[in-house]
Image 1 (spheres, rainbow, N blue to C red):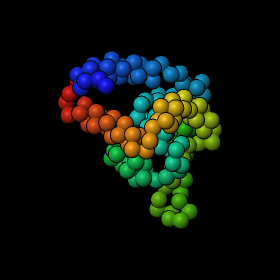
Image 2: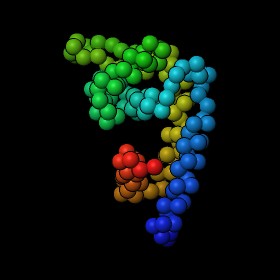
Image 3: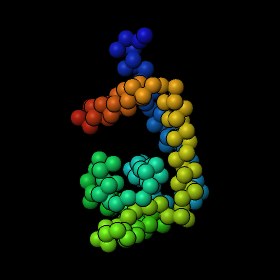
Amino acid sequence: MPSLDDGVRELLMLMPRLTGRGKRAPLPSELADLSLAPRHLCLLSVLVFHGPMTVTELATRLEIAPTTVSLMVGDLSRQGVLTRAEDPADRRRTIVSISDARRAAVDAWLAPGARAWQEALEPLTAEQRALVIETLKAYERGLSGGCC
C-alpha cells in the first residue's frame, strides 16, 4: 500500500500521460475539419450516453451555465454536429441531439475512452467505483481552487 506522498507522486506522473494520450487520440476524418475542444467532448458524451435533451438538462448534467451550453449547441449546430428540434410535448422547449450525419463519427471518437473506462471500472465494486469517481471530482475541485 503506497503512502500518501507515494500516491501523490505516482498520480502526478500519471495525469500528464493520461492527458497526453487523450490529446493524441485522432478525430475521425468526418470530424477533423471541425473546431472541437474538450468541452465539446463532454457535451457530446452526455448526448451519446443519455440521448437527446434540452439545453437546461444538458447544463445540469455538465454542471455549467445554460448560456454556455446554448453557445456550444449553437456552434455545433452550425457545424452540422448537432440538431435542434421543437419538443412535440411542449413547443416552447428545444430538444438537442447528435445529427444522424455525424452520429457514427461521434460514436467512433468516444468509443475508445468509454471502453477504457469500462475495462478499468468493471472489476470494481459499486462502492469502489463511487470512490474513484469522487476522488477524481475532488481532484478537479482542488485544481479549480487555484492549485497547479
